[in-house]
Amino acid sequence: MGNKFYELGAIVTSSDVRKEHIEVVNKIYPHIKTLLIDCDNEDIINKYDIILHWGLLYHLNEIEIHLEKNSQKCNVLLLETEVSYSEKDNFFIKTNEKNFDQAFNHVGIRPSSFYVEKVLKKMDFNLK
Image 1 (cartoon, rainbow, N blue to C red):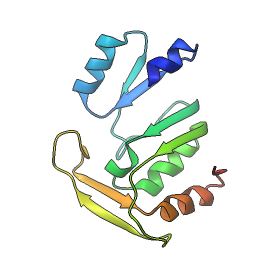
Image 2: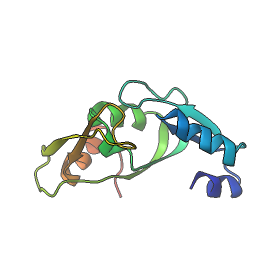
Image 3: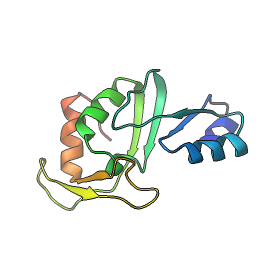
């Protein structure tokens, strides 16, 4: 996905927690900047116009802290995640993820969509 944005003229930075994933991106797309970052334990330093946040949130342990820090580092956050079915805004399930390409720190979360929305609204994020 990042390379499509690059082809449209964007300056793209891609991140992952696994070194082997970063090495693949560097080999195939040497023009894209990469960051090796553990989003459960490290913060994004730079500010970006857009953060494309797909397929990550449910692999993290502390999503409130993560979303708060990320919302301060971008103008637009495009967020996609797995959720649990519940209409409660405090509902989530912790998951044990020890398989390859799952939660790096072995604990993930499946929040309800209402939980995610509550967290983002608390930070005055404009939801669409």
